[in-house]
Length: 552
Image (tube, rainbow, N blue to C red; front, side, top):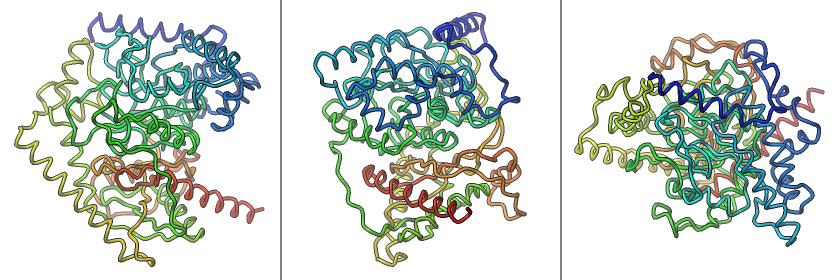
Protein backbone atom coordinates (compact mmCIF):
# COMPACT_ATOMS: atom_id res chain seq x y z
CA UNK A 1 0.00 0.00 0.00
CA UNK A 2 1.49 3.33 -1.03
CA UNK A 3 1.48 6.33 1.35
CA UNK A 4 -0.75 8.21 -1.09
CA UNK A 5 -3.29 5.38 -1.07
CA UNK A 6 -3.25 5.31 2.73
CA UNK A 7 -3.88 9.06 2.83
CA UNK A 8 -6.78 8.83 0.38
CA UNK A 9 -8.33 5.97 2.35
CA UNK A 10 -7.96 7.84 5.65
CA UNK A 11 -9.56 10.95 4.15
CA UNK A 12 -12.52 9.00 2.80
CA UNK A 13 -13.08 7.19 6.08
CA UNK A 14 -12.97 10.47 7.97
CA UNK A 15 -15.42 12.09 5.56
CA UNK A 16 -17.83 9.17 5.94
CA UNK A 17 -17.61 9.29 9.74
CA UNK A 18 -18.10 13.06 9.82
CA UNK A 19 -21.11 12.84 7.52
CA UNK A 20 -23.00 11.24 10.40
CA UNK A 21 -24.53 13.98 12.63
CA UNK A 22 -22.83 14.29 16.01
CA UNK A 23 -26.01 13.47 17.89
CA UNK A 24 -26.20 10.12 16.05
CA UNK A 25 -22.65 9.05 16.84
CA UNK A 26 -22.35 6.28 19.40
CA UNK A 27 -20.35 7.23 22.48
CA UNK A 28 -19.33 3.63 23.00
CA UNK A 29 -19.49 1.02 20.24
CA UNK A 30 -19.80 -2.48 21.74
CA UNK A 31 -17.21 -4.92 20.45
CA UNK A 32 -18.32 -7.88 18.31
CA UNK A 33 -17.09 -10.21 21.04
CA UNK A 34 -19.13 -8.52 23.76
CA UNK A 35 -22.25 -8.13 21.62
CA UNK A 36 -22.33 -10.35 18.51
CA UNK A 37 -26.02 -9.72 17.71
CA UNK A 38 -26.87 -6.02 17.40
CA UNK A 39 -30.40 -6.18 15.98
CA UNK A 40 -32.06 -4.99 19.21
CA UNK A 41 -29.22 -2.66 20.18
CA UNK A 42 -29.49 -0.80 16.88
CA UNK A 43 -33.22 -0.25 17.38
CA UNK A 44 -32.66 0.92 20.97
CA UNK A 45 -30.65 3.92 19.76
CA UNK A 46 -33.69 5.44 18.04
CA UNK A 47 -36.62 7.41 19.39
CA UNK A 48 -39.98 5.68 19.73
CA UNK A 49 -41.26 7.50 16.65
CA UNK A 50 -38.21 6.57 14.61
CA UNK A 51 -38.67 2.93 15.60
CA UNK A 52 -42.33 3.09 14.65
CA UNK A 53 -41.49 4.45 11.21
CA UNK A 54 -38.60 2.11 10.44
CA UNK A 55 -40.47 -0.96 11.69
CA UNK A 56 -43.49 -0.29 9.44
CA UNK A 57 -44.30 -2.81 6.70
CA UNK A 58 -43.21 -1.56 3.30
CA UNK A 59 -46.75 -1.19 1.95
CA UNK A 60 -47.94 0.71 5.02
CA UNK A 61 -45.01 3.09 4.83
CA UNK A 62 -45.67 3.83 1.16
CA UNK A 63 -49.35 4.50 1.91
CA UNK A 64 -48.44 7.02 4.64
CA UNK A 65 -46.02 8.80 2.32
CA UNK A 66 -48.54 8.89 -0.52
CA UNK A 67 -51.23 10.39 1.69
CA UNK A 68 -48.96 12.79 3.55
CA UNK A 69 -49.72 11.36 6.99
CA UNK A 70 -45.95 10.93 7.21
CA UNK A 71 -43.60 13.45 5.65
CA UNK A 72 -40.68 12.34 3.57
CA UNK A 73 -38.38 14.36 5.84
CA UNK A 74 -39.52 12.40 8.89
CA UNK A 75 -39.15 9.05 7.11
CA UNK A 76 -35.78 9.85 5.56
CA UNK A 77 -34.50 11.13 8.91
CA UNK A 78 -35.64 7.99 10.72
CA UNK A 79 -34.05 5.59 8.25
CA UNK A 80 -30.90 7.71 7.99
CA UNK A 81 -30.53 7.59 11.78
CA UNK A 82 -30.96 3.82 11.81
CA UNK A 83 -28.50 3.49 8.90
CA UNK A 84 -25.99 5.66 10.77
CA UNK A 85 -26.15 3.38 13.79
CA UNK A 86 -25.90 0.32 11.52
CA UNK A 87 -22.76 1.75 9.93
CA UNK A 88 -21.04 2.25 13.27
CA UNK A 89 -21.82 -1.33 14.27
CA UNK A 90 -21.15 -3.20 11.02
CA UNK A 91 -19.32 -1.00 8.44
CA UNK A 92 -22.09 -1.45 5.89
CA UNK A 93 -21.99 1.97 4.18
CA UNK A 94 -19.76 3.74 1.68
CA UNK A 95 -21.71 7.00 1.28
CA UNK A 96 -23.95 8.93 3.70
CA UNK A 97 -25.76 11.57 1.63
CA UNK A 98 -27.98 13.15 4.28
CA UNK A 99 -27.96 16.85 3.18
CA UNK A 100 -28.99 16.09 -0.40
CA UNK A 101 -31.48 13.47 0.79
CA UNK A 102 -33.21 15.91 3.14
CA UNK A 103 -33.29 18.57 0.44
CA UNK A 104 -34.97 16.08 -1.90
CA UNK A 105 -37.40 15.06 0.86
CA UNK A 106 -38.37 18.68 1.44
CA UNK A 107 -39.00 19.15 -2.29
CA UNK A 108 -41.29 16.13 -2.32
CA UNK A 109 -43.14 17.25 0.80
CA UNK A 110 -43.69 20.70 -0.71
CA UNK A 111 -44.92 19.16 -3.97
CA UNK A 112 -47.46 16.98 -2.16
CA UNK A 113 -48.65 19.87 0.03
CA UNK A 114 -49.12 22.11 -3.02
CA UNK A 115 -50.64 19.66 -5.51
CA UNK A 116 -52.15 16.96 -3.31
CA UNK A 117 -50.56 14.44 -5.67
CA UNK A 118 -47.47 12.31 -5.04
CA UNK A 119 -44.81 12.34 -7.75
CA UNK A 120 -44.89 8.55 -8.07
CA UNK A 121 -45.49 5.22 -6.32
CA UNK A 122 -42.35 5.60 -4.18
CA UNK A 123 -43.02 9.23 -3.24
CA UNK A 124 -40.62 10.24 -0.49
CA UNK A 125 -39.32 6.72 0.16
CA UNK A 126 -35.64 6.37 1.12
CA UNK A 127 -33.91 3.74 -1.00
CA UNK A 128 -30.39 2.38 -0.44
CA UNK A 129 -28.09 1.48 -3.31
CA UNK A 130 -25.13 -0.85 -3.63
CA UNK A 131 -21.88 0.95 -4.38
CA UNK A 132 -21.88 0.21 -8.09
CA UNK A 133 -24.72 2.59 -9.00
CA UNK A 134 -23.95 6.15 -10.02
CA UNK A 135 -25.79 8.58 -7.73
CA UNK A 136 -25.48 12.34 -7.91
CA UNK A 137 -22.94 13.67 -5.41
CA UNK A 138 -21.47 10.31 -4.40
CA UNK A 139 -18.41 8.26 -5.22
CA UNK A 140 -18.81 4.92 -6.96
CA UNK A 141 -15.62 3.14 -5.98
CA UNK A 142 -16.65 -0.54 -6.12
CA UNK A 143 -13.94 -0.83 -3.47
CA UNK A 144 -11.11 0.57 -5.63
CA UNK A 145 -8.87 3.34 -4.28
CA UNK A 146 -8.30 4.44 -7.90
CA UNK A 147 -11.95 5.51 -8.17
CA UNK A 148 -12.07 7.58 -5.00
CA UNK A 149 -13.17 11.18 -5.48
CA UNK A 150 -14.99 10.72 -8.79
CA UNK A 151 -18.32 12.30 -7.88
CA UNK A 152 -21.27 11.33 -10.06
CA UNK A 153 -23.63 13.86 -11.61
CA UNK A 154 -27.35 13.64 -12.30
CA UNK A 155 -26.47 12.85 -15.92
CA UNK A 156 -24.59 9.74 -14.77
CA UNK A 157 -27.74 8.30 -13.22
CA UNK A 158 -29.53 5.85 -15.50
CA UNK A 159 -31.37 2.54 -15.53
CA UNK A 160 -33.05 1.61 -12.26
CA UNK A 161 -31.62 4.66 -10.44
CA UNK A 162 -33.30 7.02 -12.89
CA UNK A 163 -36.46 4.93 -12.68
CA UNK A 164 -36.48 5.06 -8.88
CA UNK A 165 -35.89 8.81 -8.80
CA UNK A 166 -38.76 9.34 -11.22
CA UNK A 167 -40.97 7.18 -8.96
CA UNK A 168 -40.21 9.49 -6.03
CA UNK A 169 -37.38 7.67 -4.26
CA UNK A 170 -34.85 9.50 -2.09
CA UNK A 171 -31.23 8.31 -2.18
CA UNK A 172 -29.49 8.70 1.17
CA UNK A 173 -26.86 5.92 1.48
CA UNK A 174 -24.74 3.59 -0.61
CA UNK A 175 -23.60 0.24 0.69
CA UNK A 176 -20.38 -1.71 0.90
CA UNK A 177 -19.02 -4.29 -1.55
CA UNK A 178 -15.82 -6.31 -1.98
CA UNK A 179 -13.11 -4.89 -4.17
CA UNK A 180 -14.30 -5.55 -7.76
CA UNK A 181 -17.45 -7.35 -6.43
CA UNK A 182 -15.75 -10.64 -7.30
CA UNK A 183 -16.02 -12.63 -4.06
CA UNK A 184 -18.52 -13.81 -1.47
CA UNK A 185 -17.41 -11.27 1.14
CA UNK A 186 -17.94 -7.52 1.42
CA UNK A 187 -14.48 -6.18 2.15
CA UNK A 188 -12.11 -3.67 0.61
CA UNK A 189 -9.20 -1.51 1.68
CA UNK A 190 -11.27 1.66 1.87
CA UNK A 191 -14.28 0.76 3.98
CA UNK A 192 -13.19 -2.48 5.61
CA UNK A 193 -15.18 -5.64 6.31
CA UNK A 194 -18.95 -5.59 6.61
CA UNK A 195 -20.14 -7.71 9.51
CA UNK A 196 -23.30 -9.77 9.88
CA UNK A 197 -25.74 -7.99 12.20
CA UNK A 198 -27.00 -11.31 13.59
CA UNK A 199 -23.46 -12.27 14.61
CA UNK A 200 -20.76 -9.67 14.03
CA UNK A 201 -18.10 -12.32 14.25
CA UNK A 202 -19.51 -13.69 10.99
CA UNK A 203 -19.60 -12.54 7.39
CA UNK A 204 -22.31 -10.51 5.68
CA UNK A 205 -21.41 -12.39 2.46
CA UNK A 206 -21.10 -10.60 -0.85
CA UNK A 207 -21.04 -8.87 -2.99
CA UNK A 208 -24.22 -7.05 -1.86
CA UNK A 209 -23.28 -7.61 1.79
CA UNK A 210 -23.67 -3.97 2.76
CA UNK A 211 -27.25 -4.01 1.47
CA UNK A 212 -28.07 -7.23 3.29
CA UNK A 213 -26.71 -6.01 6.62
CA UNK A 214 -28.39 -2.60 6.34
CA UNK A 215 -31.74 -4.23 5.60
CA UNK A 216 -31.39 -6.74 8.42
CA UNK A 217 -31.02 -3.77 10.80
CA UNK A 218 -34.00 -2.11 9.10
CA UNK A 219 -31.86 0.80 8.02
CA UNK A 220 -33.66 0.83 4.65
CA UNK A 221 -37.17 -0.05 3.47
CA UNK A 222 -35.86 -1.06 0.03
CA UNK A 223 -32.40 -1.63 -1.38
CA UNK A 224 -30.93 -2.46 -4.77
CA UNK A 225 -28.07 -4.90 -5.30
CA UNK A 226 -26.57 -6.84 -8.18
CA UNK A 227 -25.94 -10.51 -8.88
CA UNK A 228 -23.49 -12.30 -11.18
CA UNK A 229 -22.95 -15.45 -9.14
CA UNK A 230 -25.12 -15.10 -6.04
CA UNK A 231 -24.33 -11.53 -4.98
CA UNK A 232 -27.94 -10.76 -4.07
CA UNK A 233 -29.02 -14.19 -2.85
CA UNK A 234 -26.05 -15.03 -0.60
CA UNK A 235 -26.16 -11.77 1.42
CA UNK A 236 -29.96 -11.92 1.56
CA UNK A 237 -29.76 -15.45 2.90
CA UNK A 238 -27.33 -14.73 5.74
CA UNK A 239 -29.08 -11.44 6.57
CA UNK A 240 -32.57 -12.90 6.74
CA UNK A 241 -34.06 -10.66 4.04
CA UNK A 242 -35.63 -11.11 0.60
CA UNK A 243 -33.65 -10.79 -2.62
CA UNK A 244 -34.52 -11.23 -6.30
CA UNK A 245 -32.09 -12.22 -9.05
CA UNK A 246 -33.68 -11.72 -12.49
CA UNK A 247 -33.06 -13.05 -15.98
CA UNK A 248 -30.40 -11.05 -17.85
CA UNK A 249 -32.21 -8.68 -20.17
CA UNK A 250 -35.17 -8.09 -17.84
CA UNK A 251 -33.89 -5.00 -15.98
CA UNK A 252 -31.61 -2.30 -17.32
CA UNK A 253 -28.01 -2.32 -16.13
CA UNK A 254 -27.34 1.20 -17.40
CA UNK A 255 -26.00 3.60 -14.79
CA UNK A 256 -23.71 1.09 -13.10
CA UNK A 257 -19.93 0.97 -12.92
CA UNK A 258 -18.80 -2.08 -14.86
CA UNK A 259 -15.84 -4.25 -13.89
CA UNK A 260 -16.02 -6.75 -16.76
CA UNK A 261 -17.48 -4.79 -19.70
CA UNK A 262 -18.12 -6.96 -22.72
CA UNK A 263 -18.53 -10.20 -20.73
CA UNK A 264 -21.96 -11.27 -21.97
CA UNK A 265 -22.07 -15.05 -21.45
CA UNK A 266 -23.03 -14.70 -17.79
CA UNK A 267 -23.82 -11.02 -17.33
CA UNK A 268 -24.49 -9.29 -14.03
CA UNK A 269 -28.05 -8.28 -13.25
CA UNK A 270 -29.47 -5.75 -10.80
CA UNK A 271 -32.33 -6.48 -8.47
CA UNK A 272 -34.23 -5.53 -5.31
CA UNK A 273 -33.57 -6.56 -1.72
CA UNK A 274 -36.03 -5.88 1.10
CA UNK A 275 -37.66 -7.12 4.27
CA UNK A 276 -40.83 -8.13 2.44
CA UNK A 277 -41.74 -10.02 -0.70
CA UNK A 278 -44.21 -7.29 -1.61
CA UNK A 279 -41.39 -4.76 -1.95
CA UNK A 280 -39.68 -6.99 -4.53
CA UNK A 281 -42.89 -7.13 -6.55
CA UNK A 282 -43.41 -3.36 -6.41
CA UNK A 283 -39.85 -2.77 -7.60
CA UNK A 284 -40.22 -5.28 -10.44
CA UNK A 285 -43.50 -3.78 -11.65
CA UNK A 286 -42.04 -0.25 -11.57
CA UNK A 287 -38.86 -1.30 -13.38
CA UNK A 288 -40.85 -2.89 -16.19
CA UNK A 289 -43.46 -0.10 -16.37
CA UNK A 290 -40.56 2.25 -17.10
CA UNK A 291 -40.06 0.47 -20.46
CA UNK A 292 -36.28 0.13 -20.12
CA UNK A 293 -36.04 -1.58 -23.53
CA UNK A 294 -36.60 1.81 -25.17
CA UNK A 295 -33.23 3.04 -23.83
CA UNK A 296 -31.14 -0.02 -23.04
CA UNK A 297 -30.65 -2.34 -26.05
CA UNK A 298 -29.76 -5.24 -23.76
CA UNK A 299 -33.28 -5.30 -22.29
CA UNK A 300 -35.99 -7.49 -23.82
CA UNK A 301 -39.34 -5.83 -24.48
CA UNK A 302 -41.36 -7.76 -21.92
CA UNK A 303 -43.80 -5.79 -19.74
CA UNK A 304 -45.15 -7.10 -16.44
CA UNK A 305 -47.48 -10.05 -16.99
CA UNK A 306 -50.06 -11.00 -14.34
CA UNK A 307 -49.78 -14.67 -13.45
CA UNK A 308 -52.45 -17.17 -12.51
CA UNK A 309 -50.80 -20.14 -10.85
CA UNK A 310 -52.13 -23.67 -11.06
CA UNK A 311 -54.10 -24.55 -7.90
CA UNK A 312 -51.59 -27.32 -7.24
CA UNK A 313 -47.99 -26.35 -7.82
CA UNK A 314 -45.28 -28.83 -8.72
CA UNK A 315 -41.99 -27.92 -7.11
CA UNK A 316 -38.70 -29.69 -7.50
CA UNK A 317 -36.53 -30.29 -4.45
CA UNK A 318 -32.74 -30.24 -4.65
CA UNK A 319 -31.23 -30.93 -1.24
CA UNK A 320 -27.64 -31.45 -2.38
CA UNK A 321 -25.84 -30.29 -5.52
CA UNK A 322 -23.46 -33.27 -5.48
CA UNK A 323 -20.51 -31.08 -4.55
CA UNK A 324 -21.27 -29.94 -1.00
CA UNK A 325 -24.05 -31.35 1.16
CA UNK A 326 -25.65 -28.49 3.11
CA UNK A 327 -25.01 -28.24 6.82
CA UNK A 328 -27.74 -29.82 9.02
CA UNK A 329 -29.79 -26.66 9.76
CA UNK A 330 -30.02 -25.84 6.06
CA UNK A 331 -31.13 -29.34 5.10
CA UNK A 332 -33.71 -29.36 7.91
CA UNK A 333 -35.07 -25.95 6.88
CA UNK A 334 -35.29 -26.98 3.23
CA UNK A 335 -37.10 -30.21 4.00
CA UNK A 336 -39.53 -28.38 6.28
CA UNK A 337 -40.37 -25.96 3.46
CA UNK A 338 -41.04 -28.94 1.22
CA UNK A 339 -43.29 -30.50 3.88
CA UNK A 340 -45.16 -27.23 4.32
CA UNK A 341 -45.90 -27.18 0.60
CA UNK A 342 -47.10 -30.78 0.70
CA UNK A 343 -49.29 -29.99 3.72
CA UNK A 344 -50.82 -27.15 1.69
CA UNK A 345 -51.76 -29.56 -1.10
CA UNK A 346 -48.91 -29.00 -3.50
CA UNK A 347 -46.62 -31.59 -5.03
CA UNK A 348 -42.91 -31.68 -4.28
CA UNK A 349 -40.69 -34.06 -6.23
CA UNK A 350 -36.99 -34.88 -5.91
CA UNK A 351 -35.00 -33.37 -8.76
CA UNK A 352 -31.76 -34.82 -10.09
CA UNK A 353 -30.11 -32.08 -12.18
CA UNK A 354 -27.22 -32.09 -14.60
CA UNK A 355 -23.82 -31.70 -12.96
CA UNK A 356 -23.81 -28.54 -10.83
CA UNK A 357 -20.08 -28.95 -10.43
CA UNK A 358 -19.76 -28.37 -14.16
CA UNK A 359 -21.89 -25.24 -13.87
CA UNK A 360 -19.64 -23.88 -11.12
CA UNK A 361 -16.50 -24.62 -13.17
CA UNK A 362 -18.04 -22.94 -16.22
CA UNK A 363 -18.98 -19.90 -14.18
CA UNK A 364 -15.50 -19.56 -12.70
CA UNK A 365 -13.84 -19.91 -16.09
CA UNK A 366 -16.04 -17.21 -17.60
CA UNK A 367 -15.45 -14.83 -14.68
CA UNK A 368 -11.70 -15.25 -15.18
CA UNK A 369 -11.56 -15.00 -18.98
CA UNK A 370 -9.13 -12.08 -18.85
CA UNK A 371 -7.18 -13.36 -15.87
CA UNK A 372 -8.44 -10.39 -13.86
CA UNK A 373 -6.38 -7.96 -15.93
CA UNK A 374 -8.76 -5.01 -15.42
CA UNK A 375 -8.85 -5.58 -11.66
CA UNK A 376 -5.07 -5.83 -11.35
CA UNK A 377 -4.66 -2.64 -13.39
CA UNK A 378 -7.01 -0.73 -11.08
CA UNK A 379 -5.24 -2.08 -7.99
CA UNK A 380 -1.92 -0.89 -9.38
CA UNK A 381 -3.35 2.48 -10.38
CA UNK A 382 -4.67 3.04 -6.86
CA UNK A 383 -1.44 1.98 -5.18
CA UNK A 384 -3.18 -0.60 -3.04
CA UNK A 385 -2.90 -4.34 -2.41
CA UNK A 386 -5.48 -6.84 -3.60
CA UNK A 387 -7.63 -8.41 -0.89
CA UNK A 388 -7.02 -12.11 -0.31
CA UNK A 389 -10.52 -13.25 -1.28
CA UNK A 390 -10.26 -11.81 -4.79
CA UNK A 391 -6.62 -12.87 -5.17
CA UNK A 392 -7.72 -16.47 -4.62
CA UNK A 393 -9.87 -16.15 -7.72
CA UNK A 394 -7.75 -14.16 -10.16
CA UNK A 395 -4.27 -14.52 -8.70
CA UNK A 396 -2.34 -12.23 -6.38
CA UNK A 397 -0.46 -10.62 -9.28
CA UNK A 398 -1.24 -9.74 -12.87
CA UNK A 399 -0.51 -12.66 -15.19
CA UNK A 400 -0.60 -15.26 -12.43
CA UNK A 401 -3.86 -16.49 -13.94
CA UNK A 402 -3.48 -16.20 -17.72
CA UNK A 403 -6.19 -14.87 -19.98
CA UNK A 404 -7.85 -17.43 -22.21
CA UNK A 405 -7.64 -17.41 -26.01
CA UNK A 406 -10.47 -16.51 -28.39
CA UNK A 407 -10.77 -20.18 -29.32
CA UNK A 408 -11.11 -21.10 -25.64
CA UNK A 409 -13.81 -18.43 -25.25
CA UNK A 410 -15.70 -19.99 -28.15
CA UNK A 411 -15.43 -23.36 -26.44
CA UNK A 412 -16.83 -21.87 -23.24
CA UNK A 413 -19.82 -20.50 -25.14
CA UNK A 414 -20.50 -23.85 -26.79
CA UNK A 415 -20.18 -25.77 -23.52
CA UNK A 416 -22.46 -23.25 -21.85
CA UNK A 417 -25.12 -23.76 -24.52
CA UNK A 418 -24.90 -27.52 -24.17
CA UNK A 419 -25.25 -27.35 -20.39
CA UNK A 420 -28.28 -25.07 -20.64
CA UNK A 421 -29.93 -27.40 -23.16
CA UNK A 422 -29.25 -30.38 -20.90
CA UNK A 423 -30.79 -28.57 -17.94
CA UNK A 424 -33.89 -27.58 -19.92
CA UNK A 425 -34.34 -31.21 -20.92
CA UNK A 426 -33.98 -32.40 -17.33
CA UNK A 427 -36.54 -29.80 -16.23
CA UNK A 428 -38.98 -30.89 -18.94
CA UNK A 429 -38.57 -34.55 -18.00
CA UNK A 430 -39.85 -33.90 -14.48
CA UNK A 431 -43.30 -34.12 -16.09
CA UNK A 432 -42.85 -37.89 -15.96
CA UNK A 433 -42.42 -37.72 -12.17
CA UNK A 434 -45.36 -35.51 -11.27
CA UNK A 435 -48.83 -36.81 -10.59
CA UNK A 436 -50.41 -34.19 -12.85
CA UNK A 437 -48.04 -34.79 -15.75
CA UNK A 438 -46.67 -31.22 -15.70
CA UNK A 439 -42.99 -30.39 -15.35
CA UNK A 440 -42.03 -28.65 -12.15
CA UNK A 441 -43.04 -25.01 -11.84
CA UNK A 442 -40.02 -24.09 -9.76
CA UNK A 443 -37.08 -25.56 -7.89
CA UNK A 444 -36.44 -25.34 -4.14
CA UNK A 445 -32.77 -25.50 -3.17
CA UNK A 446 -30.25 -24.04 -0.70
CA UNK A 447 -28.58 -20.68 -1.22
CA UNK A 448 -25.36 -21.97 0.27
CA UNK A 449 -23.98 -25.11 1.84
CA UNK A 450 -22.79 -23.24 4.95
CA UNK A 451 -25.06 -21.42 7.43
CA UNK A 452 -22.51 -18.75 8.36
CA UNK A 453 -18.76 -18.26 8.44
CA UNK A 454 -16.06 -16.04 9.83
CA UNK A 455 -13.70 -14.19 7.53
CA UNK A 456 -11.25 -16.71 6.15
CA UNK A 457 -13.51 -19.56 7.14
CA UNK A 458 -15.11 -22.21 4.96
CA UNK A 459 -17.72 -20.87 2.57
CA UNK A 460 -19.39 -22.65 -0.34
CA UNK A 461 -21.39 -20.57 -2.78
CA UNK A 462 -21.86 -23.17 -5.51
CA UNK A 463 -25.64 -23.26 -5.15
CA UNK A 464 -26.15 -19.81 -6.65
CA UNK A 465 -23.95 -19.56 -9.80
CA UNK A 466 -26.02 -22.25 -11.54
CA UNK A 467 -28.88 -19.74 -11.77
CA UNK A 468 -26.57 -17.22 -13.42
CA UNK A 469 -25.19 -19.81 -15.82
CA UNK A 470 -28.73 -20.83 -16.80
CA UNK A 471 -30.06 -17.23 -16.90
CA UNK A 472 -32.84 -18.40 -14.54
CA UNK A 473 -34.59 -16.00 -12.15
CA UNK A 474 -34.38 -16.86 -8.48
CA UNK A 475 -35.60 -15.45 -5.18
CA UNK A 476 -34.00 -15.88 -1.78
CA UNK A 477 -36.71 -16.41 0.85
CA UNK A 478 -35.96 -15.80 4.57
CA UNK A 479 -38.04 -18.68 5.89
CA UNK A 480 -36.04 -20.24 8.72
CA UNK A 481 -33.72 -19.73 11.65
CA UNK A 482 -30.91 -22.16 12.31
CA UNK A 483 -31.20 -24.61 15.16
CA UNK A 484 -28.00 -25.90 16.82
CA UNK A 485 -28.44 -29.42 15.50
CA UNK A 486 -25.73 -31.94 16.38
CA UNK A 487 -23.10 -32.74 13.79
CA UNK A 488 -23.98 -36.12 12.22
CA UNK A 489 -21.35 -38.76 11.65
CA UNK A 490 -20.23 -38.73 8.02
CA UNK A 491 -17.45 -40.26 5.97
CA UNK A 492 -19.11 -40.26 2.53
CA UNK A 493 -17.83 -36.86 1.46
CA UNK A 494 -18.73 -35.61 -2.01
CA UNK A 495 -15.57 -33.52 -2.39
CA UNK A 496 -12.78 -31.94 -0.39
CA UNK A 497 -14.90 -28.80 -0.02
CA UNK A 498 -17.74 -30.94 1.27
CA UNK A 499 -15.47 -32.29 3.98
CA UNK A 500 -14.33 -28.77 4.83
CA UNK A 501 -17.93 -27.59 5.15
CA UNK A 502 -18.71 -30.57 7.37
CA UNK A 503 -15.73 -29.94 9.63
CA UNK A 504 -16.51 -26.21 9.81
CA UNK A 505 -20.02 -26.82 11.13
CA UNK A 506 -20.30 -25.42 14.66
CA UNK A 507 -23.77 -25.79 16.25
CA UNK A 508 -23.09 -23.04 18.77
CA UNK A 509 -22.08 -20.54 16.06
CA UNK A 510 -25.06 -21.16 13.78
CA UNK A 511 -27.69 -20.96 16.54
CA UNK A 512 -30.28 -18.32 15.66
CA UNK A 513 -28.72 -17.39 12.32
CA UNK A 514 -31.02 -16.78 9.34
CA UNK A 515 -31.44 -19.39 6.63
CA UNK A 516 -32.62 -18.35 3.19
CA UNK A 517 -34.17 -20.86 0.82
CA UNK A 518 -33.78 -20.39 -2.92
CA UNK A 519 -36.71 -20.72 -5.33
CA UNK A 520 -35.66 -20.82 -8.97
CA UNK A 521 -37.82 -20.61 -12.08
CA UNK A 522 -37.27 -20.64 -15.81
CA UNK A 523 -36.04 -17.78 -17.96
CA UNK A 524 -38.12 -14.59 -17.94
CA UNK A 525 -40.58 -16.03 -15.41
CA UNK A 526 -39.97 -13.41 -12.71
CA UNK A 527 -43.70 -12.84 -12.24
CA UNK A 528 -44.27 -16.55 -11.69
CA UNK A 529 -41.31 -16.87 -9.31
CA UNK A 530 -42.63 -14.01 -7.18
CA UNK A 531 -46.13 -15.47 -7.19
CA UNK A 532 -44.83 -18.90 -6.22
CA UNK A 533 -42.74 -17.35 -3.44
CA UNK A 534 -45.92 -15.87 -2.01
CA UNK A 535 -47.51 -19.32 -1.96
CA UNK A 536 -44.43 -20.86 -0.35
CA UNK A 537 -44.23 -18.16 2.32
CA UNK A 538 -47.91 -18.59 3.18
CA UNK A 539 -47.53 -22.37 3.45
CA UNK A 540 -44.48 -22.08 5.71
CA UNK A 541 -46.10 -19.49 7.98
CA UNK A 542 -49.22 -21.65 8.26
CA UNK A 543 -47.15 -24.68 9.23
CA UNK A 544 -45.20 -22.66 11.77
CA UNK A 545 -48.43 -21.30 13.28
CA UNK A 546 -49.89 -24.80 13.61
CA UNK A 547 -46.71 -26.10 15.22
CA UNK A 548 -46.70 -23.23 17.69
CA UNK A 549 -50.36 -23.77 18.55
CA UNK A 550 -49.72 -27.48 19.09
CA UNK A 551 -46.86 -26.72 21.49
CA UNK A 552 -49.01 -24.54 23.77
